[in-house]
Length: 302
Length: 302
Image (cartoon, rainbow over all chains, first blue to last red):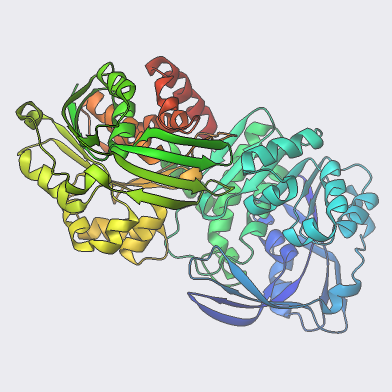
């Protein structure tokens, strides 16, 4: 079993979806990711929270193979995000973003973290992602994520991160934006040409599932069929957590195992969206996931 | 091998896509459908064309197991449609619709057609679809299609057609519009509750593939990965042609075989969008399709 170092955000969110409304709930890419990944493997956590971050989530993370020595708690307010989802859950409006203690965040890695075999660079400024890479000399696998905000505001830095990564996880809209191509297939081809060291690109297609390619083989996986999505917040980070967690658990980074990791990531994301905030990630274990693995097999076989 | 009776439109199209522009090319739901279905089985064709409809397409159809005794040629102009696709090919603007000889179309069935085992009701006014059903007393299988225009303008008639159908083919936007549900999964559940005689609902998800359910089993199939779609016109009818053609060829209407039919339909549609108008449908045979069937297996297996 490999250890995963994650660097990302810790947040407090206000979320409104067609299923309801919650205020002041825990969120942030590193929190979703690590709760998801810790089902499968051990996580070394690097992030900053304010003194207002709820203690019960810190306790939950501690109880779940998540090493929090890299969590800096700074006097002041935690990063805050408020968003409202549209009726079809595919779109959302950001109502408020307050960086707060995140504004001056510099990732600080405990020495014990420097032997982490896998690094997951969650969605934060690409310069911070690159700083973390400087601190860990020889990881086995680097998995990175980003978002349209950084693709627009720091495109060269984003490309620098992808050039240092083994696996790049991105969504449909982001990869077409980034590549200037007309569709995600051509966009993935283009990024693989420009970054030939990549083992795989994983394109998240929202409710339509996942596309993965290494430039040679291609793989499509539908989304787990959920009638009632309660809260899509963190679905991408939960996917990345299940995905990277499975790779860490097995230590096998082949494309065949990357496909299997996509299945575990999708199942993990399906739990995440079943409830508001990180609540959906509390209520499952590896045995449940095995049942759903078989459901996925039936769903896609012909 | 079963015979398929198709009723639908014959058209002349002007099409502009990011790949180019063509004018006065053959189109129409019955034309796309029958060229696709005739790869697999025999087709009895019911439609109306004007005296300006190109003779070479009529010859092509005759050469391909398509019985044209039900094609009425009326002095005047063929139904005309002009459309322009957006950059991402998912959306299009209709620039012109001229009904012409289609305006007074009443389907007339040659007696020999009345023993057709399968009926495909392509996208025309639901009242015309119902008329055709009156004329064929005991088909084995009725497959129907519609579009948002009829869902908005004649919703009760559309429901009447679905209640008489065994398989209903629809797209994502149409089924959510029709059901008032938030997503296509719940929408399919709802239609199956209201029309419990349905053997299956097939939801076309565009570039994301196909979802099929009989209310018990569910099936997801991605779209065949095509880098460069030239012309999406007729993709849905080509899918329906390959789909219904496979069911006719095998005479097996089980859900397991409906899943296989979805694969053949998707491959057929992928040929259709490779070129403008019906040109893509001229250039393939069953042997090609077997290769692509195996590609689909690889694409979805984990």
